[in-house]
Length: 199
Image (tube, rainbow, N blue to C red; front, side, top):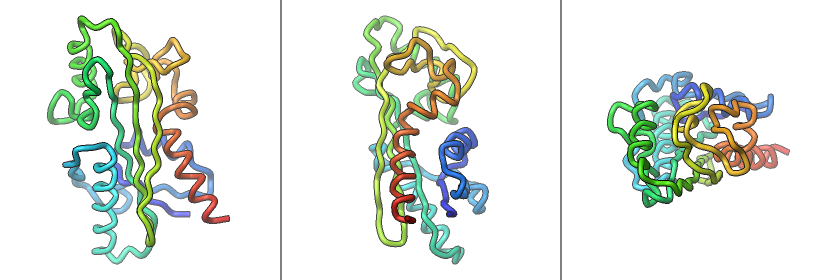
């Protein structure tokens, strides 16, 4: 089954592709000819996931692409001590252009005097089909490390220690992350939904 993921982020595309069964063909934005960055003016993670998916659906209609399922995800890191910041602004926490290193540096600065570092990662996936708009949500709780550790992953992976572990996502590696992460949980729901529809 062909499905379009409204993302140009190769890390995310590869991460999700690894989670999908073999009968899914995952296309990213580059595969369908979208080279510009999709605006994310939403005030919530859920709203941004819808706006990104809708943007692609409208693009495909203009190109007479034919009916195809489109999904978009938006994720955010919510740190309890920072009133759930960076949240919807996670990707641009340190300003434009997006930069993972700068975002991590800013987060560590903001938490310099903070010992209680509870946090959670949230992902919302919006799926738009010919007939409906659906949402799938995943979260993983954890804490923020005092310094970056590990060299795999992306985003805040070097700082986020998932509950039940002593290592960051960046230390645990893709296999563990893809089994327990916020995105993995949301993708699993998406895959189950589509698979049940096909059966």
